[in-house]
Length: 187
View 1 (cartoon, rainbow, N blue to C red):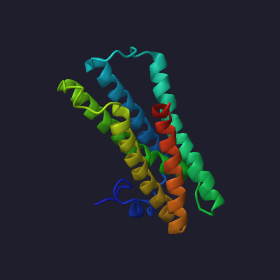
View 2 (tube, helix red, strand yellow):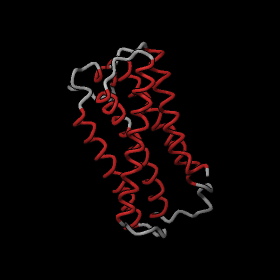
View 3 (cartoon, rainbow, N blue to C red):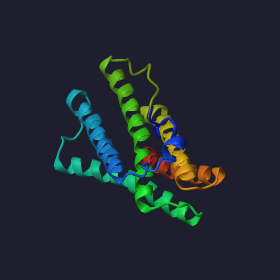
View 4 (tube, one colour):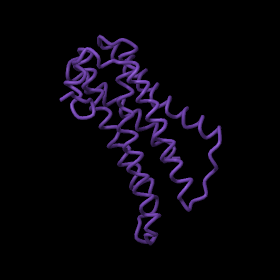
């Protein structure tokens, strides 16, 4: 059975084909389309007033997707290279792309919970105020932790960093990504 970086990043990133740039681009496209699907679900079925789907909206979601891919790539490559990792730019792009999968899963789960609460017409008094705080923040932190777990495996087994160095680099990158995701909630 082939390994997957979502469950066993150590074994996956020890493989020679782990840094596939084609696979990385496919993951980014899947993340973008998944984000669009979640947004479209709200627009089609939700009772909340949101702006219509426009070219601007499509470009904004693409911009966010690229931001969530490029920032971890730069951090993983830059920090990894500074710490002596054997990491090529294409490998860093592929490694960072695998971190998008937990982010999409977290986005989907939080939106499904909010959608279910809306669809089931749950009394707003029964739901704590600020659903972004009690739902989105923990799921984002969990997703970024999962992404850091994936990145640690890639840095350790795919790039040759020691375990503690790979772990701290992945956690720092995950923390910065969590900050990027949670900044709109904090403001």
